[in-house]
Length: 69
Image (tube, rainbow, N blue to C red):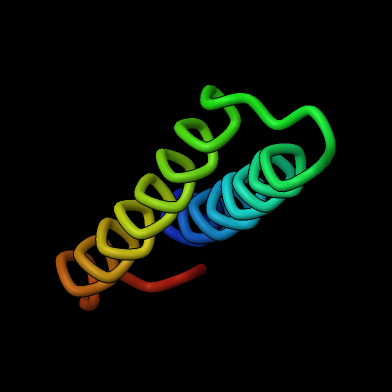
């Protein structure tokens, strides 16, 4: 596996992890004992996920001529 392929897999896994964490934080916020920090962490996680998607697109565009092998 090339460094490019590993990087793409790592960005995708990181994005899914951040989205899951954000959903978990928002679920805690809207639960019985929701705190403001849960809302802040959830919103921050979704912003970070958007940033990772933008970075992934930038990375693919930058290295489009390099093989995945």
